[in-house]
Image (tube, rainbow, N blue to C red; front, side, top):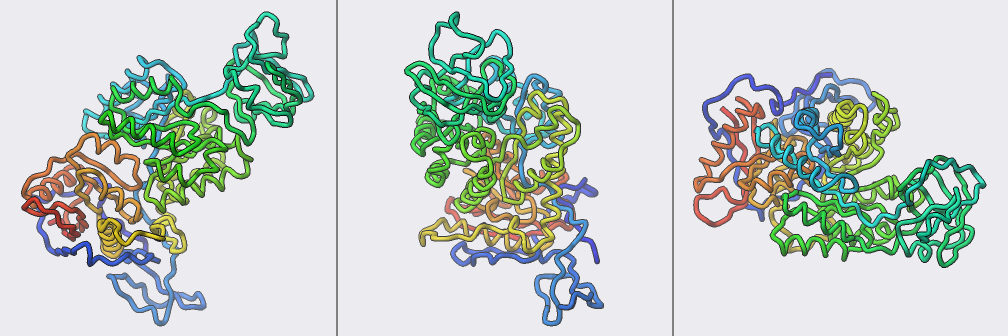
Length: 561
C-alpha cells in the first residue's frame, strides 16, 4: 500500500520561487457553485483498489479526480497520512507560566489562545500577563488570542481555622449566619445569603464537584443541616453545587462587570461567560460590548443544569461555547456529561459556531509527567466530535509539567486528524448537513463548500482566504477541508479572533486596490513562512478580488511557480 505524500504546507521551505504564476484558473460566480457532496475519500490520496472479497487488486491507482471502481472498492486504511493539527489549544496562564519565556515556550509547543482565569489573580497581575502576550506577538512568530474567563456567580464555603476531616455519616451544618465565634467544628458559613432558599431536604450538596458530598436533612431560616455521604477533607473557600440545580444568582455579577471592563480596556479577544442560564444573559453582554465598540466574541460556558435545559437558544445567541465539564458534572448526572458535550459540539457545528471542550482533560499531568490512557481517549473523542479547540486549566496554570501536558494534547490532536483523514466513514472532515436553511442564505456559504470540495480533489497545500470581517474564513472552516486554511486580513484584532476556528491560520496583510498585487504579496509571505513552495496548488477564495469597488464571489486555483 502506498503512503500518502503530503503537500509542502507546514513543511520547511526547500526552495523559494521568485514569483507566482497562474497556471490554472477557475472563477465561479457564487450562485453557480453547487453544494459539496460528502466526500468519501480525498481524491488527492494514493489509493489501493481491493476486490469485494477483500483481496488486493494487482495495481495501485492514484486518483486524479476521476476513477473507475466498477471492479473494486476503495481500501480506506491508508497509513502515514500527514495532516497538520486542525483543532486549537487554549492554555490557562498561572504563576508557573506567566513570564515571557514560559509563554513563548507554550506558544512554540502548540498554544493558540491564552486564558485569563478571573477567579484568581488581580487586575494588575492579569494586566502584566496581557502585556507579556502582546510582547510575544510583536516578535512576529505568533498571533496568540486572549480569552477572559469570568468568575461567575459561584457559591463558596467560608474560611476555616484548619482543614476538617469529614467521614461518612458525620452531621454537618452550612449556615448564612455570621456569628463565627458560635460555630462548632462541623459548621461553616456560605457566601450566598439565599442559599437556604435554593436548597431543599433531599438535595445532594457537592463540594468541589464531588470531592465531598452531603445529603440535606433539614433546612431552617439560617442553616442547612446535612449528613456526609462521601467523606474527605474540607478546606477553606470550596466551591458548592447542588445536584441538578443552579443558584438563583445573576449570571453576571458586579465583579464580572468590573472584569469585563478591564478586558475591554485591554482589548481581549474572547469572553467566556460563566454559569450562563438563559440566552438573555449572553445577549446582554454582546449588546454591552458592541455599544462600547468591542467586537470580542462571547462564548457561553455550559456548566449549569439550567443551561442544559435551554441549550439551543443559548448557543444560537452566542458567538461560540465552552463545555465546562467540571461544574456541569456537579449539576447534572455525571453519565450525562459526555452526551451533553456531544450535543453542544453537534449543534454548534450545525449553526457554524466554535466550541471549546474544557476541564479535566489531562488532570493527572498536574502531578505526573505522563497522561492516563483514559485522558488520551478523552482528547481523541473531543477532536473526533469536531470541537474547534480543547483547553488546559490547572495543567498549565500551576501544574508540575505544563509543557509536557501541552505537548501531549497537541500530539494527540494531530494524530487524530491524520488517522481519521484515512477513514471515509468518519465525519470529522465532513461538514454537518445543512438542514432547514433559508433560501436567502449567504451565497458565500456555497462558495466555501465549493472551495473545500476543490481542495479535496486537488493536491492543494492550503485554501487561502482574503477577508475583512472574518466571515469567509469561518465559513470555510465549518466545511472542514483536509488542508490548512490560511486567512489574510488587514485587521490586527480579527487575526487574533480567528485563532479559535478549526484549521484557520490567520495573518495580517494590508489589501491593495489591485487584487493581483494582494495575491502576489500573500504568496510571497507564505513562501517566506515556509507554508508553500514551488509546485504547490493553492485554492483562493474571496469576495473582493476585483479591481473596482464592487464585490464578486470567486474561487481561484493557482499553482506556485
